[in-house]
Image (tube, rainbow, N blue to C red; front, side, top):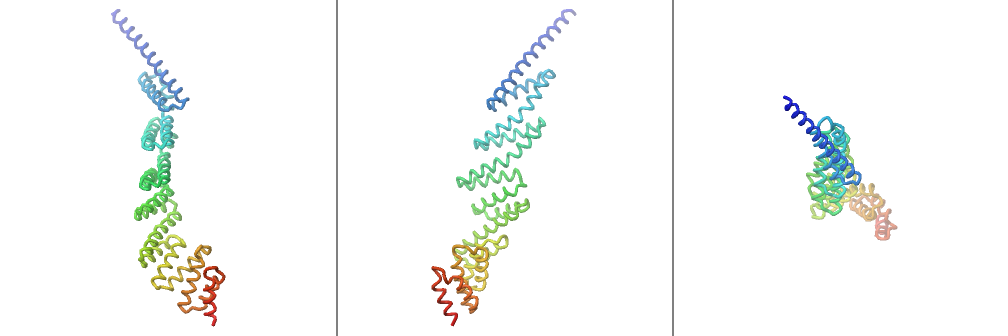
Length: 311
């Protein structure tokens, strides 16, 4: 019996010594992590704190404070590593690290780090999308903005930006769909303006292709979303070519109302005068001709028309 008691005592002493050694090693790892943190060696710091945490959890009650300190440090360090990846434009690595940081922060009940990690995801993909746009890689930009919007489907501004990229890529249907999302999320004016531009683009292409009825139709769709003067100009030009002069006059007058200082304003004014003259509305023709009678380019001809109509 005495031998048994001695053996148990020896075993207890050995266990105590081993626990003390483990505690010393865990503490050393923690201190190494703290040192690495001061030199901004975040990867080494995280490795040290994680190993210290594992050892502390194995030790038990004697390492409770060390375990708590590790749990307090690890989420923030993990997030900082993600930020460094973002800073260096290493977005794939950053995405994985942000996911890891959010999970570990949730596990260790660090709500601030968890929230910041979630918020950084759409911000990061927006940053990448803007970089893609700078080098005119529109397909890659679309992919980046898609990830940004998927991460925060309440961000109407991101939806507008994504719609613009879709429009550049000629993906009109996708652009219209995402602009609707932008409208739902408070960006109605911006989205409608961009939708209008999409239809203006269509109208301009139709005008250049001599598809005049299509040009007018697309321009009128553009007008439904925003009063962009370009839509009225295209509609006026197409209508004039279709010999729908009353429509052309109406569109041109609206264009001049919206953009009175346009570089081509005097040309349009003279055209409207001619259209009114063709419609035998001499009073309106004179009104428009008189507006450009002193113009260097159209003045001489306008004066002739004024003289002729005054007889």
